[in-house]
Length: 342
Ligand SMILES: *[C@@H]1O[C@H](CO)[C@@H](O)[C@H](O)[C@H]1NC(C)=O
Ligand SMILES: *[C@@H]1O[C@H](CO)[C@@H](O)[C@H](O)[C@H]1NC(C)=O
Ligand SMILES: *[C@@H]1O[C@H](CO)[C@@H](O)[C@H](O)[C@H]1NC(C)=O
Image (cartoon, rainbow, N blue to C red; front, side, top):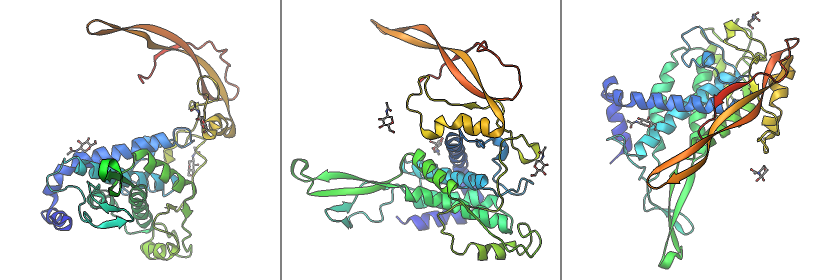
């Protein structure tokens, strides 16, 4: 069983062979975007749909620090999901990566078990996600670089799992395999890369190098010295405070932010500074709203077999960014809403 031959075989049999992957690729891309929304939930730019166009032939051709993250997490999501699918036996032509089985991995352990077949997911991510990039300019080069950085993040966060063998679990020898982490870890990894993203300094002499025909050559030069694992961008981001339709920026007015207290006892630094970041620093004030949350409580088990619960009402305080000078609502806004189920 040769993975390369299998993959090449279906690559050569043309687009029809890929149909079986399309829904998984879509699931993977959705997975990436979901993670993007989680990672940026308390940032001014919060991964809105309006900035999620991967393809460059739609006029939305900015290449900011944020679009670099969108490319990376999408490519990573597709790679991750297809790799997971493969390990779960969802596809006929792919299985565990057994290329090293039986070989010594290190002191006291050998390769065994089912290693996740990242090469499979990687290849399909390249095929599907990179294909969206049909330009030949610096932007295309930047997007492809960031797609690759996303896939490298999946590899970088993989973990080794091991199992002990030997007399009554004495662990004299272990078998080990590589497995995917929780996708959250890929998201965390890429969020750090976003923070440290590098701006590509193009030679400005050929006018508008970002779009010019020889942009790719210029980009190739600019890429020297930037590791493949790092995110890169071309344009500085707007401040994301104010709404700007043409940029697809919604602004932070009306956004919810978090404050310590109120059941959020262990808020991270990033969380507890979110009202400052989203509201105050954007020239907005923080509006406090009380909301009633109805949830199930005091659940009792009745023989046999039902669970009966009471409906409890809890008042929670929420914070939103609001325009300065707007009429202050004295905590009177009462809204009923259902609590999340977990
Ligand atoms: C691959 O996994 C995703 C997410 O778990 C799932 O939605 C999709 O149906 C799977 N694809 C196949 C072919 O089983
Ligand atoms: C939106 O952003 C563009 C590009 O930065 C700028 O030219 C334009 O003036 C902005 N529009 C508004 C309403 O701020
Ligand atoms: C709160 O955070 C601290 C430090 O991050 C951690 O050690 C502690 O276990 C957390 N407490 C709870 C209740 O989560």
